[in-house]
Image: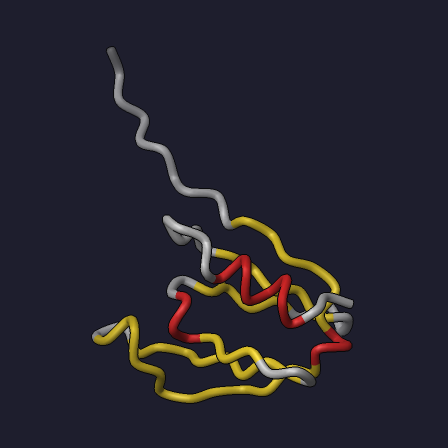
Length: 83
């Protein structure tokens, strides 16, 4: 289980790095913008953005804090530029 402070700290890192929140049920949620996660003492509210507006949510889900079992960095794609 992760604490609200740990999750909030990760979301507030500068520069922001996309993160994957992993739930105990095996579900995962990719977070591309820190404004789309609201951290509470007992749960997270995760917003899912519309492709046309990446920082404004279309829908949300609530995830109990006790269900958060992992935070993973989402790898940034690298360009394969030949030298």
